[in-house]
Amino acid sequence: MPVLEVHLVEGDHAPAAIARLLEAASRRYAEVLESPLERIRAYATLHPREHWAVGGATGGAPAPYFTAIVLEGRPVEQRHRLLADLTDLLVDVLGATRSRVRGRIIQVPPDDWAIGGVPASGARRDEIAARGR
View 1 (cartoon, rainbow, N blue to C red):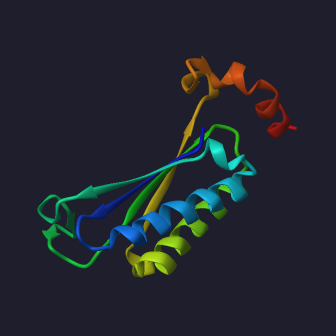
View 2 (view 1 turned 180 degrees about the vertical axis):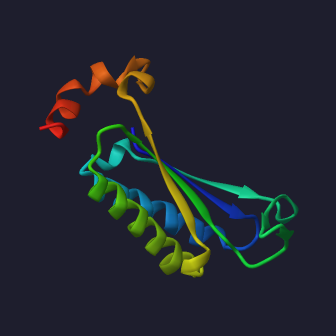
């Protein structure tokens, strides 16, 4: 289920650095969520510089943004660690300025997420129930 999307300005980072980021972020995401690595999906969306504004102006310093999607019910401590760890990776791997990195977690109800066409509430029933204990 876990999905990560990182938004970057096209041309600000070498393709190899973006690949390293996605690999490291996938491993960190799996570790924090205690989820099998093969379940993690990580994507980089590259935006043309003229389609990116910070503070109302285009062409400024890089300001990466990420969205992490998780099933509802994850403990707040786990979500906070995920926010911090993903920010650390953007700083460490891409050289982003920490204060310019933004991120959010979107919690999705298990009935509203499909795994192979089946709602996660059914496909992962035992795992979801275990988190609630």
